Amino acid sequence: MNAKTPGFNVIGQLAALRRYALSLVRNPDDAEDLVHDALVKAYERQGTFRTGANVRNWLMSILHNAHVDRLRQRRSMQRRHDGAAEVAETAIPANQDHSVRLTQLRNAFFTLPEEQRAALHLVAIEELSYQEAATALGIPVGTLMSRVARARERLRTFEQSGPSATVTHLRIVGGTGDDQQ
Image (cartoon, rainbow, N blue to C red; front, top):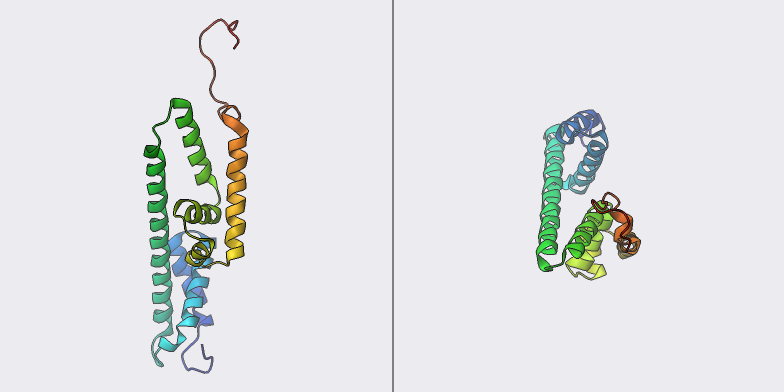
């Protein structure tokens, strides 16, 4: 953005952008991220700004569109996760113990940090190559590989803990207590 362009005062618009972002996302940290994303997009698209146009309106429009893009991404990711969950629930006609364990594993998958879950989903479920997944997420291949490795390690640790370590809320009801197996 050319600082010499008359009427192009981005810094003077930061307070208004932050207020608008906060009203959209209702979280101060997310609002700051949204403002940052909008300013990056504004910088990338500075050539589309018409001299003499209202910079505030232009920036607010970019901020709003960045917010809509984020919402679409979240909905799309949620649909993919829901689809994966449905497939996981219907793909294997399992016995009761296996079904409980599979549900626990699915829940463990959904407790992974979002960036690890997204990386593992693209590589393991969608079967994208590391390069394709990294491109889809907009991150370097090394970062993707690290996220996938950490996600797999957390799930491997969960799997190795066994059902008895994770099902602590169940107890035997009835019997005399003499019938040890």
